[in-house]
Amino acid sequence: MARIEFEVIQGWEKLPEGWRFVEVAGVATDSDDRVYAFNRGEHPMIVFDADGSFIEAWGEGIFTNPHGLHIGPDDRVYAADNFDHTVRVFSRSGELLETLGEKDKPADTGFVAGMTPVQYGGDPFNMVTNVALSRAGELYVSDGYGNARVHKFSSDLEYEFSWGEPGTGPGEFRLPHAIAIDEGDRIYVADRENSRVQVFAPDGTYITEWNHVTRPDDLFIDSEGFIYVAELGERAGRRPDVEILPHMPHARVSVLDLDGEVVTRFGGDDPVRPGNFFAPHGIWADSRGDLYVAEVVYSAGGNRGLVPLDCHALQKFARIRSE
Image (cartoon, rainbow, N blue to C red):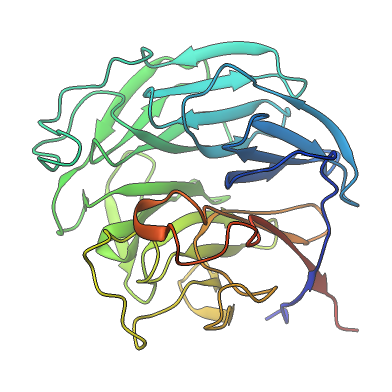
């Protein structure tokens, strides 16, 4: 098995003067290894080259709450907005090509924010979280927070079917927060509040699950067949009345093989230190194997005051290649 090690690159990204991410919800790279930071500042999509130099920004006035990001092999950009219940498809220069879901019209699931959890699975979408593409260009969408389902769309973006209900059993979800697809078209779903990754066949048939992760926020599968898991841990995203205890698992990144075996893990208990994490929310590796981790350190649930406002929101890790 390949040895996988990373070294954090401090001060990698070069934002224009006066700009702030606030927090970065998603990150992805295109075919030229340009890095897209899907963030909650004034400029929602900020694009850098691989060396961190600013290229452009777009998306102003479009999004309500940037959440999940995916870039396809044709460089189309898929952006999930969980507050207005849509997935938007853009060209890599920011031209809006397609919108899935009806803006500000959540599906009926019995969910009432802050009052009633999801009662039953519904149509697309209610607080949609993220997307992934199969080898044939079919779109699978994780629909969490206000829903408990995965939805499949054809390569022409026509809705086909869904699966999932709220719960803890096989094929049930407590916040399907992210999704990834391997070369064999197996579907991996980050079932965050059940602290597991569930694995499905393309038709939604349950295969297995991995329970050795803690509140997985995002997933990415690289060309070598490794799956990268951004684990939120037990400290971030909790209500203000939840006591944070020293022994609670901290955030980390895990690298697994496609059987779920751990290859490596990293992230220490000091969330502010470079190379560690407080609330990793998005993860992606470029063509060279370098890793990008996006974090929502400011406004997620009870995070206010737990870390300084200038805590890292996007970190780059150079992959160390052994001879």
